[in-house]
Image (cartoon, rainbow, N blue to C red; front, side):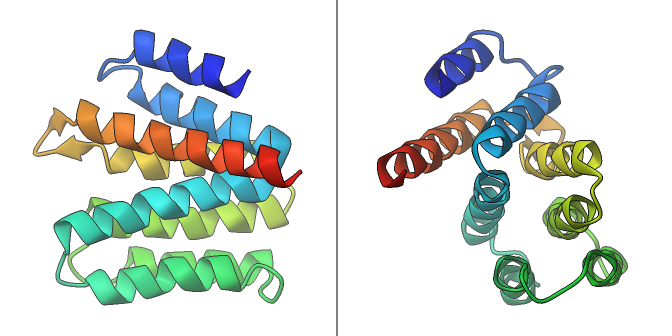
Length: 158
């Protein structure tokens, strides 16, 4: 079933509906387990950071890892606060914005605002798909493949 969703997105992918594709993938993963969507977005961000190595690469990568590791410790308000801190760091670019939105998505899930959380997860990945105003279909395919791997691993462990 998940593979069917991915196939449908691949058949209909274009720059205009990429955001909806990312959000649909996040929603489908979250239907199984909220952490699957968070894990997928985190992997996409980490992959992007590794590929492009922005000047704040280490700091952003640490924030992604901290977001994953702190889910049982931090409150929704604390996640929002850290998301704002990341948002206002100097020289914000798409990667930094994606990390900030990851933190906000987790905050929204913790605060019971699941629809907002899913939108922020989708938007986080969508931000990573543009390179100088050009949509990167190859990167989108890699991210969809990663979503399938995460889903399949979940199904195997279930």
